[in-house]
Amino acid sequence: MKKKVLLSVFALFFILTICGSVSADNNTTERVSISTNGSASNGYSFEPSISADGRYVAFSSYADNLVTGDNNWFSDIFVRGRLLNITERVSVSSTGGEINLESGEPSISANGRYVAFVSGIIRPKSCQFQCIYYWR
Image (cartoon, one colour):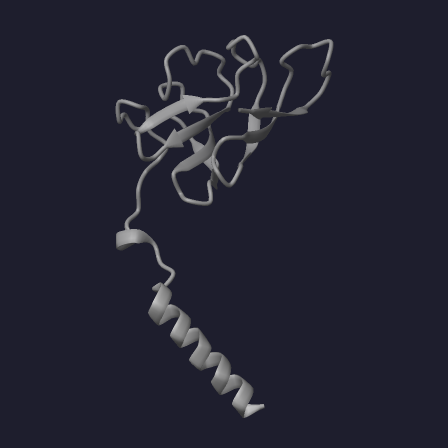
């Protein structure tokens, strides 16, 4: 039993020595609930979801200043591209229009290409309560 534990510890030490340790780059904290021009959000932001490489962060927010034309007074889903410093609202209809009820619970794919979220009605006849949508 002791040999297995020692062997495991040695193997872990060897792997970490060769591959490096698992830690955040530079141990920094970065605000992502900001607009593309860098303005801080003027509303509550919550429910973050981050892509596997950390490049994209999806989140819900009541802020209306993260993108232009956000006039619906409801929470929306945004994706912040950390490398290009771009914030995009993804909880919109297929024609780009605003969704007329709350959106929340974003979940971003590992590569950051897809975002699933729960939302209110986009087309009243096709979804009478809350529906699940995805953005790509």
